[in-house]
Length: 318
Image (spheres, one colour):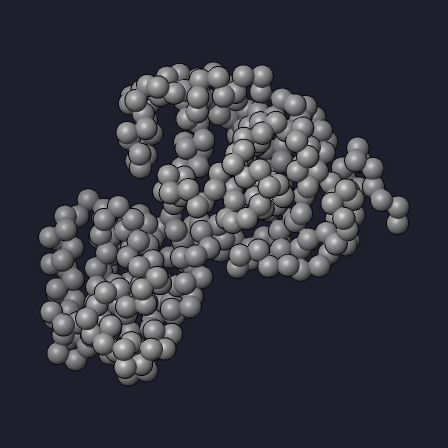
């Protein structure tokens, strides 16, 4: 099979899919072209194929390692985050192509937008629920972005090599970005709060894979809750509560990182049995609105401790 020309993008993509081997990107398995980069298609080829001039498209790379972006990503506000830029940011461009990077040089295609006019980013244009209200001080611009479906089949699937210049987070579409993978659909829908029963390792996978578990992150961060942790080796239970800006997701993330959530009896258990956290099971007892006060959440938590006798017979110490 002769190598495809750069102008015949459809053939390039077929060629890419015929020559596959599996590699691991974070926790997600992707397929990558085995050939040298010049034999793989570039993202600019796709832009040309759908009738866009690559020179009129700005490529934008957001990194999940950036705390400001990550907080917007968890609230499903990627578009709102992207709209706020310097006033002359889009001069000469008609479209923006957004990418999101988990780690390294690879970045996943998120969406394509047509750029409209902008207004000053004054507080009155700030989206409801935006996590950084201090950013809207009228010093920058807030652009009108309209989703374009020309590359819809590649959204959340196509991965490019951004290159070594990761600090250059916005570049012209003519910059050659090799397509290194086209991911099969692997996004996990949220099962519903009543169905959430997770082992520690399942919870760790959810917490550490924000892209594949985007729906989970959105749901778990949107609620306060009283939750239950059960030691499946002896049946002992711990009742806890989650409240604050990141809701249940934020609290459970702390368990993934610390293993014990800074709970006294859990810390002692792990001192005696260092691998015991692997047998913890996480579930939800009761949901509470984000508008609930801290006192209301703690009161509900106390009621569940009484119902389940988790202080005299479980892992709660107060």
